[in-house]
Image: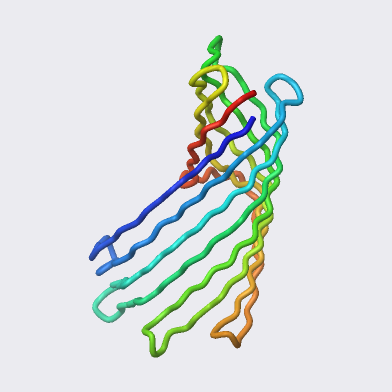
Length: 204
């Protein structure tokens, strides 16, 4: 099986207000593409790998938080651009929906390693703080989905990422002088509803 999946999200917020948020201005996008290849070791069971590339951009012009007459917080001129390359190894199992040969469910158990870099700036040009960040990610998770066969050789699939064991390391260089580090770890099986992936696959 060979194929690819992709996802795209775009934001355009202009003078938006909601509860304590005021004068919210933001533009940005997140794009991800992931080719895949796998081999069926038996009926309805395949092993394989995929590579994913993602890129994000966020440009926040202004954000004001009003918590009362005497407490107001304002953020402005925040810019963030990042990209990441990830590699996956996985085992995927399929399940027919009743007697249908066109529709089915699948579950993908995967091990992921990702490497990414990002740059951010905060504040006006004369007082801005520039941060360069390097990110490492190690993840064990599952990705359930549904597949619909267009014909005997091509199918469209939709999947969701379900987090499992997640480890992240961050290294920062601030204004090309100061150094910073952070490490996080988590273990849960929370469904990420913002990670819907649409893909096209071909079976041989």
